[in-house]
Image (cartoon, rainbow, N blue to C red; front, side, top):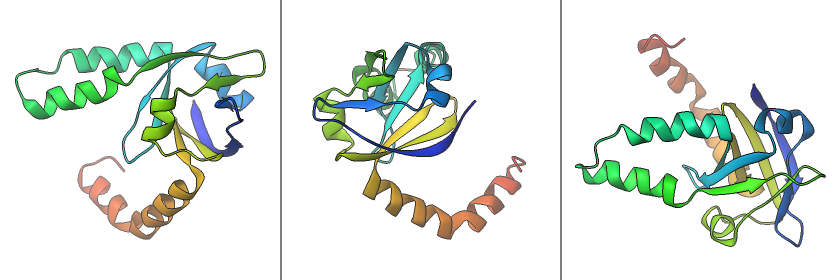
Length: 144
């Protein structure tokens, strides 16, 4: 299970070390793509297949659906983990997420999110102030 919050640096060659605890779950080959809220998503190959399969069943007739599928599939890049557990972040994904040198890797059960450190801190503070309201809505849905 992918959980936790880790702060790492992107090196001058655009490589990011994935924490060893998370690396075991992600594997040697993973899929990096545009995420939501201005971050990147990193999926294991297995989890990517599950996600992509769900996307493939969406109707392409609706513009919103086509746009959503385009965002994730066209932006996807297969990345290999090197011997030191690093992945190379392509320029277009680094630019999309506006990643600086310092980033946060957040484990979210079936994927990792990669955030610019400052953007993550701002986003997290906003979420923390809304936690009670979010929990209430999830309770209404029967989730918690």
